[in-house]
Length: 308
Image 1 (cartoon, rainbow, N blue to C red):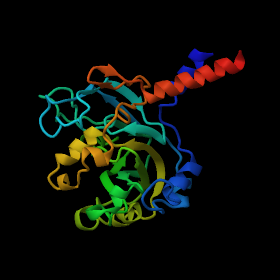
Image 2 (image 1 turned 135 degrees about the vertical axis):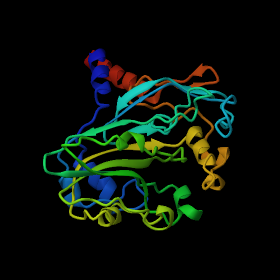
Image 3 (image 1 turned 120 degrees about the horizontal axis):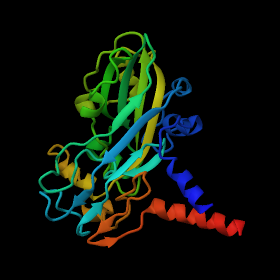
């Protein structure tokens, strides 16, 4: 029974239609995001196909041997995560290491770009536009300073794909990774596919540096206000020392980077959380049990005790 239960848990890490009640709670009612009203009920109700997002990433290392600022692990020493491969299940928890944009394998390859593979079905005679965005969270970090005016953040988009030409390579090559720096509270990152008949125009940043972005403004600016939301996936992403370093590495954002104490970057939590259920962080050579593995073991043990 234990083996079957574990196998069943692992297979949850695959694309599926999202639960509409959860979508309403998050993207309409604002349970989790910084603001409510991200989507409408009609948009949620039009989702009819899966959106697959597969991460197949190499092992991760962050240590004093890495170039600055990736040599600062907030006193944790060397942080290592194994190679992982998983598909996003709607609403799953991930860390910023799991879904990162750089290889971070060795000091010579630390800025080698990596990205997920994104796929979805298209119907003949229709056009499809893809949008990834960050809903931020209600954590105080996103309500202070230059972050205060933000409702959400656009990550990237790809417009006017169709069945005859197939999925655009831009889905992978222009991927803009998640970068939440808050360790205690996840940001919700959403991937959406919009079906339309007219040509979309890729919008310019909405507001100064994209500061006034919302999903509804984006589809209006793209000229596809009546598009149907036909596919959607999302994950809840936790910050850690890696995402802190990526913010430090951006001159425009470096001054807003939380310090190690204020950011709570002082433990192995929220490091390796990937959906393959085998990711085990190593902090200075000491292995730390993955939270997912502990959860699987606990569920299996409970079932075994109950049945015997």
